[in-house]
Length: 151
Image (cartoon, rainbow, N blue to C red; front, side):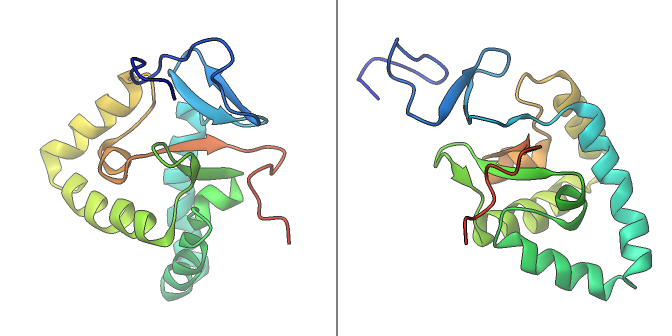
């Protein structure tokens, strides 16, 4: 990126190949993806509970830990979403997912902060609750699976 350009400011021709500039959020995102909608994110939140029950909780945690290496959680995976590391322009790593989902959720779980986090999520242009801010991530909807590893 040329000197003098701040976050969300890209001169003509500076957008890397395979990426596009999302006007609404001010982020560079991979072609074929979009920032996950508020409804889709809330759906993933509420889908996690039945998935935990069906997998007897321990299965959900094992499934989740396996998916962390792909930048996903079970509910996000089922709904076609991917956690994206904004500063690295890549899917979140296992370490980022652990930071986001363990530390971020513990901090977010403090009752008044949970409401503040939800308001930030709904009102922010990047749709980032507190756990995404802690992890430096956003959640993308990937309907065409362009972020899936090509094995």
